[in-house]
Length: 190
Image (cartoon, rainbow, N blue to C red):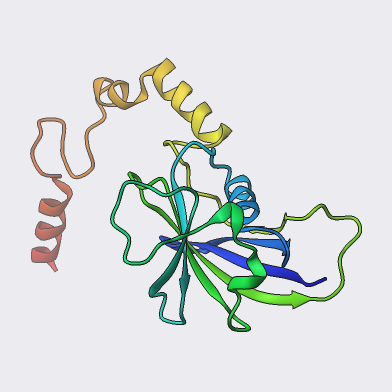
């Protein structure tokens, strides 16, 4: 049985990616669910894959459902389409679009095919994770939540200016910083 290893890049930042391993006999629905899990997205929105070429042009569509839109050709359904049937090249590429309103786009590339299954893994599985995944609904992570709480609790944004500190480049009376004038007069003395 062939084990396919896909590298999934977030389109907006290619330093953020996940490697997924999946059996060639599993479906695009399995890949879809695994991809969402690896990037910590929920499963509440529309989604579709497009078969792609080396220039990342969109080809045949493999969709979660048939949506109310015009299709150039009838799409395949993720639940009915086996991964192995859509692999045409050794470095086959797909484009994955999730949540058509936010248009999350991921570039999916086949990077390895292995004949041996790892008995310790349950397929599909996320085998590598690089970079901080984008936040599906806004700020993400404990650090950002804690910073927001501290900022709100102490009202840091307004209290700094109220304590007499000025914005960078301004003096207390709101004029441009007087350092430039000092530097100019020092230059004249030399």
